Image (cartoon, rainbow, N blue to C red; front, side, top):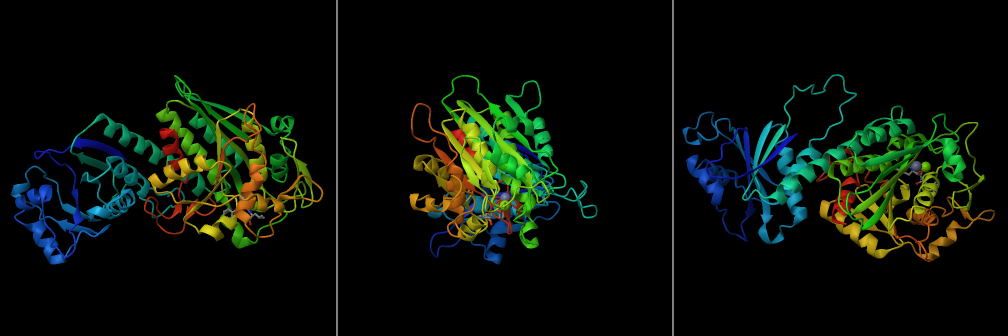
Length: 509
Ligand code: BES
Ligand code: MG
Ligand code: ZN
């Protein structure tokens, strides 16, 4: 999508078919006033806008839109020859207008304008939010549709012009960032939509190579094969992989900024490209969507492609995906097996379907050795998290409240819903095994999301020269990796969570 930002002038010439203008709802029982730019345009149109507002009793309530069609030739609109529609957008009461309400208003505008090829918007808040949502909400995955695919013929939003009061450097930069982040979210979504017959661990490795390619690319990439992982003692990750015919791929991106490094952040994404449950086989209904079990790794790919393009200052990033399938077979790991993770801890496997935490165990143990200042993992880890928080919200868990609060703020700012679940010491009782150091699915259906979180936490290393663990945040995205309903920032289907939260966090760290 082509997105441009221009300074709005009374003499601005619009080339597009539609112009969107927004206004707040009047206070109390007051009547709607047509003011400012709207009044100007209303004059040129001999009162068409104010008349339509009256006729339709349009109140500028939050997220309501009104499309006014213009007669083909209006001599007074000589500046805007192709203009066919004016779209009015309600912002609701001014005193209640916050970032979330702004997102709702922008979303309804973008949705009503989805078939306008060239849209101009008189900016009413953050230009970056307009740019971001224009891309995020017009996302489609049509690769496998042979009939009703657009094939470039159907009308869709192709060009967005944002008309701002003052065209400043920071606005241009924010719009560029928003565009890159939205395009990177689409990379994550594509990978989640794509079926598991296509997206194998090898496919993820190939995708990683693409993202790190090019002479001037600031990313370094290392891919560990099964043999390399054996040498490192990754017995937990490899146990999951051993039932599959697809070889595992352990993917490691690293990024170092030019100039001073303030902080080293490690990211880990769950990359189970298909989760059948293994020998603890899932029932068919529960297996249907298990291509989505690599959503964490999809987010890593999106984030690192955004990092490559935006080159954030001051932070070093290490990003890990321990990619594998979880399959039943004659070679598969079995309930009752005892395995040893890279940090030496032994694990009794009572359920081969609690595989994500095993792959993460070795991934976080591995990255801990690089002494990062903090570790953030995102994983479609538990159905229990969906039971607790529903489909729209991620569960966040931590050993460091400050880290959680900072990431939660970043999530709130971009509208990704996340809610904290506690990791009480008392829950740790359910990690205990009779035969080994830990058991992988011991909570017997109680506090399942926290049990998964606590298990991963056992593999977080210590801070250098201290007995304290590295600050760590766990984001369980089993619910919101896939939306069953359209959201303010996403159509139905793969969401690309938490690319936007993490990018917001990285760019403000
Ligand atoms: N990948 C699943 C979790 C999941 C469920 C993700 C639904 C997305 C949608 C995970 O590997 C799993 O199977 N977890 C088990 C854990 C249990 C055996 C302790 C679960 O949630 O049932
Ligand atoms: Mg599973
Ligand atoms: Zn899984």
